[in-house]
Image (tube, rainbow, N blue to C red; front, side):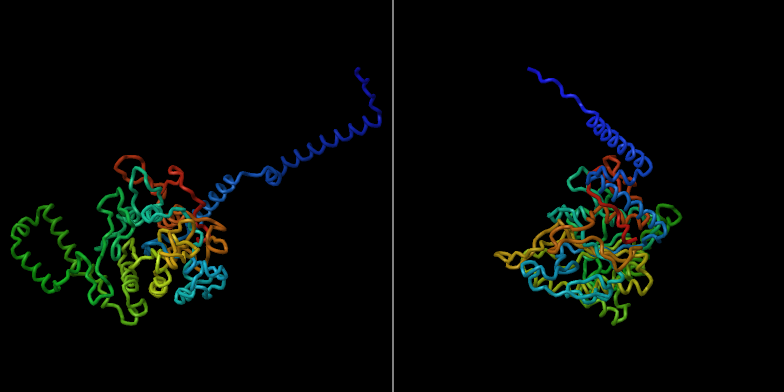
Length: 472
């Protein structure tokens, strides 16, 4: 049997009405306040992480574009490519206190001339120049393959697509082709290209880097195609004079435009072999103390040649570090041998460019295709090795309008993961292009007519956290 409804007392009715009206009134007040202060009250509805990251990227990109407006354009680039991948823990992102399994025998750090920056004790010369360069300690792409990681770092494009994109050096040569009219090629690699892919990409042979070969630390730097082994300068001049005497056809048709163009090209070639172009590679023109300061080894003298190429106006110079950093085994011995050469040569280059007033117009960047595993592999057959590690590593940048004495990003206490502010290949290269006055969205002449662009992170779904506005 249904129970009769209990009558509501006037007291209860009054209490319910008060509550109802109170809730309605509070909602009305909040709605009105929200209309007056939308920014404050929008925070109540939390944004998705991807929305926040997209906003951060957009803000960084916009800030970088604004700051770059007041910067002079990059005139030349020196890329020091540490092929094989150098350990970040043992060099420019040391982790004191991480323990023997992470540090091995390199457990000492040193201060620099910037209070907030410490380096491994293997880099005493770079420690004196820290105010002139910055470190990106949160570089990441997650790729552990030599070829594919090198492609990512030097093109900013996803490997495995329909097109083989040109490297950053080839892109510079392409966009600077109207500005640069020097005798030397616009894109030079010492000593051999080590990108493990075709650096010119679909731009073709005209933008292939000129590889010098030879050794600048030898008694004679025998640059292939310019300085020939076993052939003296006098003999080359005699050959030219003989050719001129017997070249009756060329002299008789000098008024014909095509023949005049051939003669102009020949004269340019001779200037490269016997004239001003060749003298750029002649380190006998440098004072002995300058050569000593760079280091009397192949890498040190490559850095000195790079400075001379900058003075000659060459747009893009790459130094492939001789020896490599792929230290799966014999890691600590290799680091003890190679880090002092890198330290001396790179520090001397940065200091020399600064002293000559060239650093602001010259970008120097130094890194490999990835880093190496923070945890040491002590077990056989490695016996103290580090392996490929694309999850996080460090890039050194100097000059070109970038601030010195800064650190961008951070890793965790063992150097295994990005802790703060990831930087992806498109962020790094995009910043370089911005400072060089190269539109990263500009189309390139690809053979398939796909509308290829200098960088296309959206189209290729490449990760990006924004341009490096922190350094501008």
